[in-house]
Amino acid sequence: MILPPVRYVRPQSVAEAASLLAAIDGAAVLAGGQTMINALKLDLVQPTALVDVHRLEELRGIEVADDGSLVIGAATTYAEIAASPVVRHHQPSVADMAAGLVDRQVRNRGTIGGNCCLNDPTNNFPPLLTALGAWFHITSTAGWRSITADTLFAGSLATALRPGELLMSVRLKPLPEGTRIVHRHLQLAADSWALARVVVRLDVIDGRVEDARVVLGAVPGSPLRLATVEQALLGHPADTRLTDAALTAFDEADVETVGDAHASAAYRLEMTRVQLRRALDDAVERSVAA
Image 1 (tube, rainbow, N blue to C red):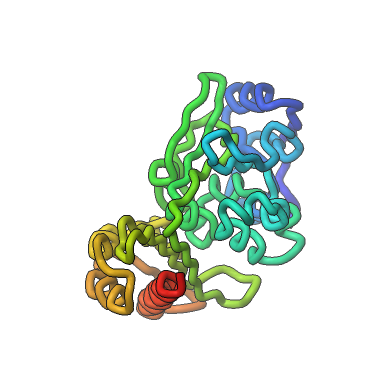
Image 2: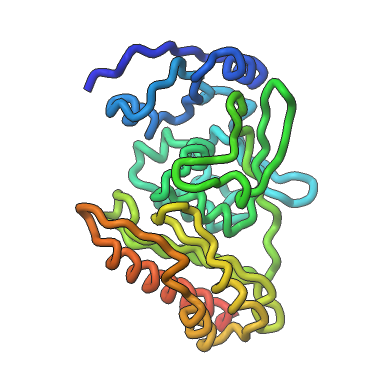
């Protein structure tokens, strides 16, 4: 389908980008464009202008802050994240996620910021970054602010970004030594979207779960934290009984699923339970092995 007419601007700095977003009513950020271009073709979005930030060096790069946090620029591509030894050392689950995204063409162009700001329920990074307790640094002509993943992700295809704001970077604090991160999903195909997605984080100290995050993707409202399951895991020994405790606390009423041409709502719900069980089994196995 032919793209509709739309104004295209390429700012030379973050300050110029913020000014353009503030000045042009209905302007949208163009980063990797992996989803935006398709959405334009399908007439799903009608921005008045595209502000291309893909080449802004201020939005790119990977570094370690003084406090040991990993800082990833919003326009950093999946391929750059996957290939970074710094990411691999400090946040291996993020490197693994980036390396497994779709195909090489998408990894070379898609950005972590675009993945988060779209917040499609099938996207990979929002559930993982929620489990990791990520912080997001945002700028606009009004100044700077930082918000957590729990605040940024506001439901399917929605975020807490305000009109005129631009995501600058993602910040991930160092993980405790006993942290286990496991991501499991069921996909239509290796390069397709997920029918069910679960991320489990367990902070294990002296053989017991000190903190836990259980986050679902591929469901309405994604990323969705399962508070009752998390609470059931706290203080529990990190052994084979952990999975049973979590599944007992898993309340299907807390999880909404929808049916479509690929799978029924009931199948998606059951596969979510299966992926949760497998993720917890993997986390327990890693804890025992450690």
